[in-house]
Image 1 (cartoon, helix red, strand yellow):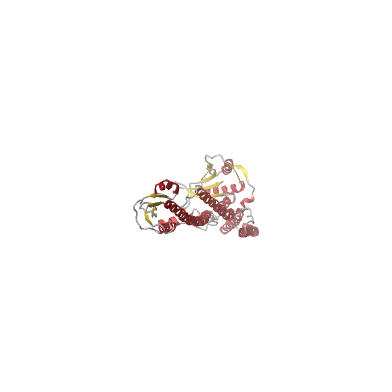
Image 2 (spheres, rainbow, N blue to C red):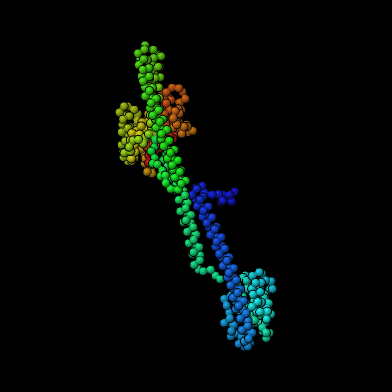
Amino acid sequence: MGGRRLLRLPRTLRWRLFLILFAGLAIAHALSFGVLFFERYTSAQAVMLTNLENDVGTSLALLDRLPPPERPQWLTRLDRRNYRYELGPGLPGVPELNERATAIADTINQAAGRRFPVSVERIPGDRLRLQAHVTLSDGSVVTIDLTPQVMPLADWLPYVLVAQLVLLILCSWVAVRLAIRPLLRLAGAAETLKPGTRAGRLDEDGPAEVAYAATAFNAMRDRIARYLDERVQILAAISHDLQTPITRMKLRAEMSDDSPEKDRLIADLAQIERLVHEGVAYARSADGDAEQPVRIDVTSFVESIVFDYQDIGRPVRSLDNAQAVMTTRPHALRRILANLIDNALKFAGEVEVQVRDADGTVVIAVQDRGPGIPDDQLDAVLQPFYRLERSRSRDTGGTGLGLAIAHQLAQAIGGSLRLANRQGGGLSAEIMLR
């Protein structure tokens, strides 16, 4: 399980593409460097063997022709970086040779021209060290002490490799950004596409695939906008057409003789009329952005609404409010607060309104001490026509559109509505505006 977690790719597409692209380029770069290094090693070994053959042949011929007393004077002149000459039998070694040592031994034998007896032994140790014992024509023994080494890498090569890796990272990141940017634009446009909003159209430029996706998204956006407009028009037409027969029915009912049936009929007609009006209001709440935003003092605005309720004798009071000024749509905000306050008055009798500033977010809380809402239904009551009161009475259960209209209007003006039960009983409806 631990290995699977280590191999699990990141969740974001950006990092997945970056890791895949960078890993592929890095592996290709490593393979290229490995092939280059192997070719350099092979070439260096071939050059070393060639130089060894030419140099050893000349050096042995020179030492063989020199008188024995003069040979020590020439030894230092014949030394090279990888090998040097000694007079005498040298160190005791072992005859076992690996492939590389065998190639060096064959090279020395060829350099000696088969004229001098040669024996090559490996000196035990951490690194490869060979000693070739050559018997000259006068019987003297010359030892060639070899420590084969490949030509060292240049000091600047590691810096070049680091620079190449940095370039790979930058190129991979730029490529991923160019590939992900259209997706981010599309996701942002989809995020801002909400009922009633008029988000800007996506630019239909760039690569063919990106332009095609932007064109399809814009077409979908236009279809949704047309559908919402048609819905509002249909509901408005239904409301207009129903007003006349409802008015005629109310007039006929009022002109009839007084009776309990007359009162019930007039009450039913009033409920039908209210339901039609609220249905149209819910449909039109999606057009909350039709109002032009203005800069208002939210604290004074909320207190004015509270004073309006107090003027008609309703138990609504304002708590200690924070000072907040922001740009919003005041008529839509007033409708939201009115729906929330009316809903709280219906079920609790008393309402408290408070304005808070939470890290740059203006929070308007409408609080009551009523029965509250079950926790598992806090989200459901924001849906249209959902009523906690399952009775058929509109007086106790309402139409189920008050909170839905407030919720949709809050989204239309760029905010959100959250419901939460209060400790000690009651409900808190919070409008969060940014």
